[in-house]
Image 1: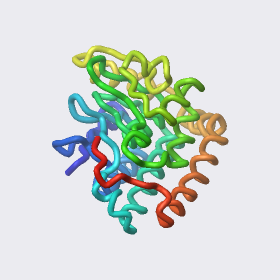
Image 2: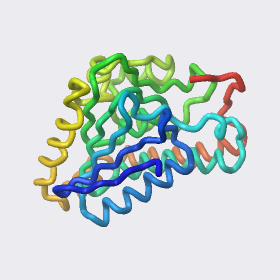
Image 3: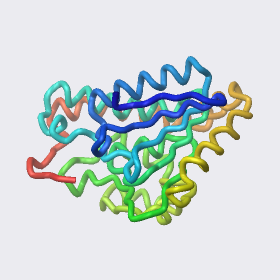
Image 4: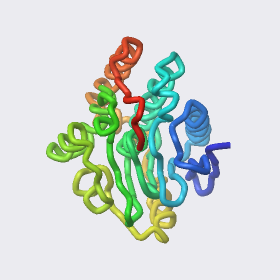
Length: 239
């Protein structure tokens, strides 16, 4: 299993750990989606986290470079997962355990409350640095969270933000010492169980109506672009 699910005090902790860099492979995406199904059935606040030092390094590049139907499905699946988090009917806390790159950063900005570990980590949408045209859906996900200046630097310059700078940019809400991250994120999730969940869900959809519409339209545009070869990937690209 690439994803672990545990529940306590109406908080569902979903932990990504593939033993490497938590790539958003088709299998990882399927397991995350199944975990969210379970959390929704449990009516639980979600705490999404990664392995020590690394949240996620983004899509599986070999699959993406292949450009076959599996790549199209993987990209669609990643952004549909982010859209699901953005509209999830219960609060979503993200504990960013370290590096969050590309699709990892897009999942990060889809959370309701983002707590990051302080340290030598970077958060970046590095697509243009590795020869990938920035997906439409990624643009819309970043647009709804980042400050205008940080948004432009992230999308067009692939700027990497250290945790403290990521707070000012809008990727994170706060940073804490790595040893405190799990406790702080869990305490935040437990506190959110006191919300009226129907009001939370309705307010979230109202506040994010325009962003969700833009993301969902962008997902379709990206699927067409991938089929037409519109997301170029350099063969020698490396993270």
